[in-house]
Length: 422
Ligand SMILES: [Zn+2]
Image (cartoon, rainbow, N blue to C red):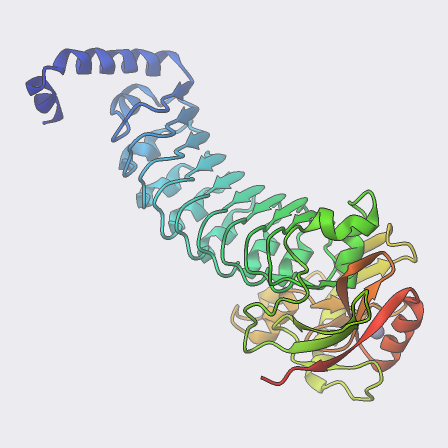
């Protein structure tokens, strides 16, 4: 049909010579460079002669779909489809098991096809600049995935299982609508870089990151504090610690801004004096996992629920965050100490199971304690020692630990806070 149309426009000869050239090229090469060709579909010659092809560049064409026979290309390892008009993949695509790099950036995906989860050898998945709103659960099977780049989409949350991808090294989620990061990311063992600029984050995870990744989070203008542990981890990467606020996160820590705070999470109003002695009130929002918070001097008993979570976690994991007197030394370690994993007994939607699996919201900041904290904590808010422009929050497991932390962190100016009533 198409050939006929071309015949009418007098282009039939060009068509034939094009496809003859293409056939010749497919037969001779392992890598096809077919960017900017105006292709509306992948030419059949690839199916006929291309079973040996290893790499295909089809950037900036006009593809709207991938053919079912793509699954017949048993040697294709890298597939670059940047800048087309594709919005779905055929189910059979999951059979392209040998694929290691898949670039679907700048297409028209509104959701991520679940069949990608079957690509068990995939190392890089690039989904930038689509209109994706969530990552499907099927992707948790991508055990070899090292790079996930999904910037310029419409993600509001990221799933906790991202933190369990055993080989994830790089996570790029710039320019989305994220309000928070998954707590379990702190437990990812290989993560070396997280980029989450231009989102709507109001807090970063409070616990130390096991793999000590570089975290870029510029232009999150509702983010106005860090946890003491995470700030100490970040200072390591900055040559002159006092500049950490400028170097680390341009467009954050605008302490006067109220931002779009959530209605559900606990919000604290911090009282602080500016350089010219003016008293200011800073609202900060705590992560949703925290259900009860106390000030340093509050003599309270921790609920049985919280105690149970701490005990179950301690019976399975050894998890410590040690901050030495100099913040140039922060050591986070986490290991399974009992062989049988919790997931073998309990269903996925069992709430305590999720809490345990996602890791504690923080380890007690009293350096001699190291108790995990899940839903209840004694909170201290401070400013100072190394960075004067960034409020820090530290969580302790008990009143006595909170007092010890305050004594230990002598250089920090502790700030008064009260819970905001909505
Ligand atoms: Zn403690």
